[in-house]
Image (cartoon, rainbow, N blue to C red; front, top):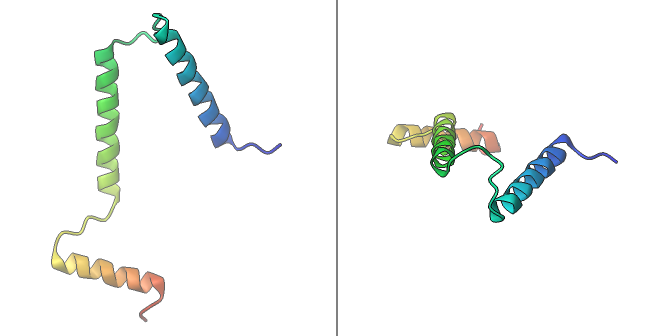
Amino acid sequence: MNVSKETIARTVVLLFALVNQFLTIFGWNPLPFSNDAVYEAVSMLATVGASLWAWWKNNSFTPAAIAADKMKDELKAGEKK
């Protein structure tokens, strides 16, 4: 059986989330975090994730940069030599 590490990791995280949700429904919060702390952490992760994604991608704003991106895409596709 060749189960990937990623599949195992996703399954463990899912099981952890399900157990946590089940316990929370019955009034016991197994995680020592307040709602405000969770909100702040999720907000920070979203901000960092969006910042890294925006930084990583090529963000062309000027007409020259947009034209260069188009030419680059055409070269990559093999349409121009």
